[in-house]
Image: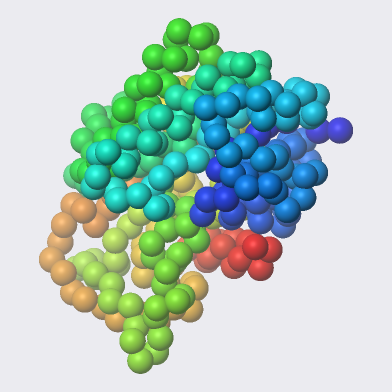
Length: 298
C-alpha cells in the first residue's frame, strides 16, 4: 500500500498527459495518484470522472474510495486553448483553482499543490528569478496566475490550508519549442533560432516530465510544510539550441544582438532544499531523454 495518496486535477491537459505517461514509465513507490478526467476515464482504477469542479461530490467520493487523500494537485486551466492576451478567458484560471479549493475543503483535503507559472515574473533582466522578486507579468495569462496565487494565499490563511503555488518553467514536451518542433522542422525547412554573440540561443529553465513527476511526488510526501510559492525547474537552465541538438531537430541560426532576455531563468534552490534526493535531469540531453521516454508511453 502507498504511504501517500493524491488526486491530480487536469489529467487530460498537455502536462497531465505527460505526467500520466511518466507515472507508467517510472512508477512512484510510496505515492499513489488518481487522475481526474472531464470525460469517463479509460480505466476506473487509475482515475475518476469529474466534469464540473464546482460540484465537490466526485472528489468526495474518490477520496472515500481511496481511503482518504493527502493532497490535491491542481493543474487544470485554459492556457492551452485560451488566448493568453484575453483577460476574460484567462480569468478562468483563477475560478478553476477557487472551485478546487472549495472542493478540497468538502473532501477533507487540506494540502494543495497548484500549477502557477514563471510567467508571473515577466521578462526579467538576465538574473535568475527568486521567489521574493517583484512580479511584472507581460500578458493576461501571467496576470491571471498572479491573481490566482493571491487567491491561494487568502484562502489558505482563511482555511488553515497548506497551499503551494509552483512557478513552473518549461516542461519538455508541453512547451512550444519541443511540443511543436518535431512536427514542423525538416532538413529542407529547419527551425529558425535566435543565436546570441556568446554562441548560445535563449536560455530557459526546463524540467523533464519524469523529473517533474518525481518532484511532485516528493512534494506530496514531504513532512515539511511547503511555502506558498516555489520555483520549479531543473538545477540549471539550458540553451534552446542544446535542446534541439539533443532531440535531433534541424535548425538554422538567426544572429541577434546581446540581450538580457537571452536568460529568463529560475533560481530553484528552495525546491532542491525541500527535495534534495530527487533525481532530476540536469542537462539538455537528460531532459530530451526523459521526453523521448515518456513519448513512448503516451
